[in-house]
Image 1 (cartoon, rainbow, N blue to C red):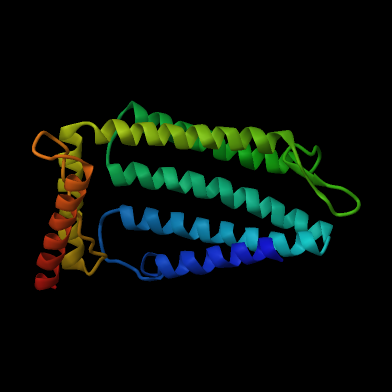
Image 2 (cartoon, rainbow, N blue to C red):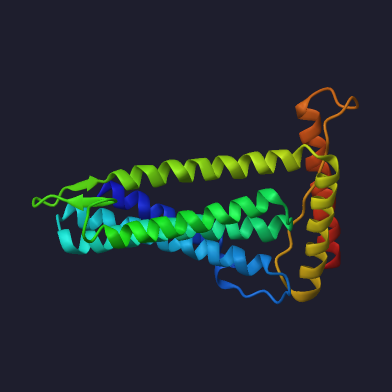
Length: 226
């Protein structure tokens, strides 16, 4: 039951941390909160499938475990897909990186769902022995590697944007504009502080301290206007 306990803990923490975004509707014209909410629900269903899968595997219930295995991989693929969709609207950029990520996300989702359908006839993703033992298939490993590459691509894209001064200023400005809109519509409000390392600072600690100071000043300002 150890595996299932980890899944249950993940569900509890996920709901506690993201309760507002999951269950509270925010009145805003921006697609960002909705995309984020869909992503969070896909992750929640993934954790739930993982939790139930652990219970059925220990009980050697082959048919229910097979169905939960399909749900597990389907929700995993959907969570990655919806995460990419959220990143696209949050960064609000239309360029070759964004287009490439979109194509890769769609391709990965289609391949994963198609593999799950084909798995009924040929064990590409997984199979079970007569004794109820789970055996992973080659497609499962290949899709996992592609997902790792996808996460790496997003990381590279994010780093490229982070090292561009105009992009950082634009992102910070867009973030504060969204905060202002949310304040007027009752949506979520988050304070942030941005500081850039240059010759003015002696090290990273000073940069983080200044960024924290700016964040708390912004937090006080937002509280005074609430």
